[in-house]
Image 1 (spheres, rainbow, N blue to C red):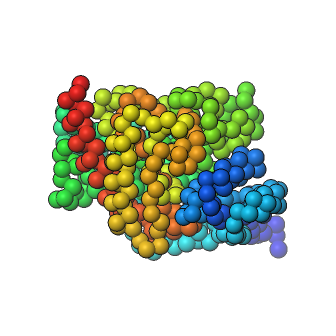
Image 2 (image 1 turned 180 degrees about the horizontal axis):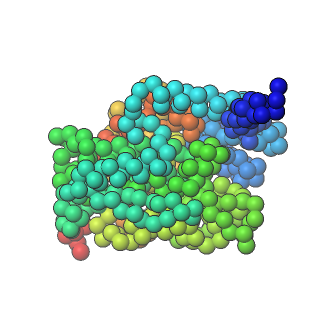
Image 3 (image 1 turned 90 degrees about the vertical axis):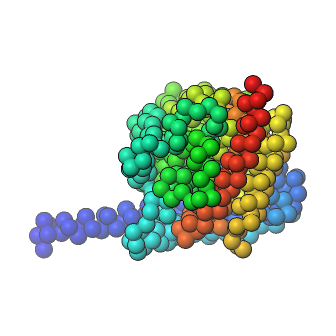
Length: 431
Ligand SMILES: [Zn+2]
């Protein structure tokens, strides 16, 4: 056979090899369920997380929710030995991560091809998200304003929408600001943000009319588009941004955007290793992506009544501060957060867990530089981290659960919007 006739075969083989090996970076990695018995187990696991560079997919809650932890082949023995030494129960969760991810890719392929789906019934790419925002703004010019907020480190346009029946001019209305995918791999968060837009704009139900009339909304569906795209094209479990600072590291890219805000920056729950998933960066607000969130907060701080920073996964509604101190309105923060959690719990599937609500440092562990804490510190009365359900599949939430997560979370957002608005009326009276 002539060499030129071999070319298509060689190309086909190469393509096959590339796609078959997409997740080979995780060869030998395993995930483990760790059953925490008490707070001390939680602390031991958190120490191991930093020491053995564990990737905690789901933060457990003692006596109730298992932690799900990924460990490298190099650190696996040490990790399991430490758990055994401390008599912490554990079991293998995923034995072959590349295989699991390849199966998920095949499933998503089928999901996409099986029928036409709306953008929030799927895991859209960044371009599809921006297309949706543009189409909504074009179709509803009196209701939706599209804002080009700026560029990511790799020059992707970060867009958000403002939804208002009064063009954001009525100061008697509070603003609800929600954002998603600050952590690149948390794919299921963006559909929730998009579904909120859908409910408020395209699919307004009678029972939601007050939410559109009485509240203004800012929805930023992808905070970290560079990392997000990288999870699609290269490394599925990428969490950070994709910035590059050769003066700090020539081998590791990005920082943990949710440790990059200027609030107790670089003090608690962070790693000084530029390759770590909790590396906060060399300076607060080094990232264009976090500066965009900051600028939205500061521009509208007098009117933003509630900020919801959406993550996946773990069934948590958390508030500040990450250093274990409480804001003055902590009773109100608990009230609104618990009402949201209880609403979602009332609609959950039997196989889903129950939401836990509380101070992020007390419920989970200490942190610094988070979006949640920054929002609270600059004067947003109700600033939350929301950790959505994972249904036991890590960041690969099976697509058949997307509708349920969208639906139940929207109902939770709706009650938190109404309740925080009541507090807004008091806030305005006291000015
Ligand atoms: Zn996250």
